[in-house]
Image (cartoon, rainbow, N blue to C red; front, top):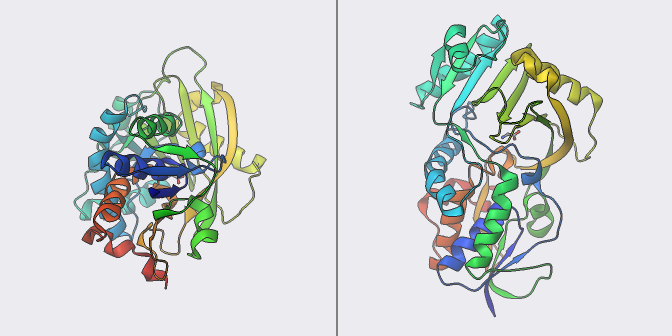
Length: 341
Ligand code: GLY
């Protein structure tokens, strides 16, 4: 019999399966063949720029997972890992006031982020608009390419002995890592949070004209631009309490206007893809990690909401530990499924 069945073939499920197989367990991954949140995800590793008011415990987990990313990426090969850092950029004085308030909070947690004047930002990224009023630099906020990460994890998992199938079978332990589909399997409060995202391509061959991840505030619109070495730029994302997958003209307009307000050259890039994905959201925006009360042998690893990619390494390590030893690491305590009992 299989020791561990992991339901879900996104980055979280595959990484858990891989880590369990590396520890000598017989592991199957159940893949329903549907594209999950990772297909839309930009791949920002942003423990600092995405540290929000009131989410200090979650921020601690993001920081710890981000530390594990360089070694995790090195084990997997080319997953598009880039460590150029993130620039926070504000267009108007109101935008700067908003960005500064969050930066002050992040700095109060001793996170690495430094205020920057417009000239300092443009020294780092000359293609930024001359209109920008200021911002910040988060040197530790990096990126990977989720569309490289998922196949790399599949390869690594299979090489470690994992079987990938579309059928479920009995197993010693079942790990539910099915993103938005986890609610139906567990009864836990995981809900889809729609995000519309665009993919652009630089008009000239080679990398885009900027290298940092840019998190922008532009006339009260929030946007991020993630440049890949191969010339792609991911522009995202809406946050909508909707379950449909429709791409709306309004969202595309808002994202592109905000992006081009900050990096005017963007208007000349090619628009190659527009899609909507769904983040697995939870009532407190934190993931749900640990044994499922009342269901012996069922472990949950879901609800990663906006942070699935950055949280992949630590989720895999902690859940593989739990499956192997049967005892949750104390780091899992704040994220237990029991908090929603
Ligand atoms: N972490 C980026 C997003 O959820 O849009």
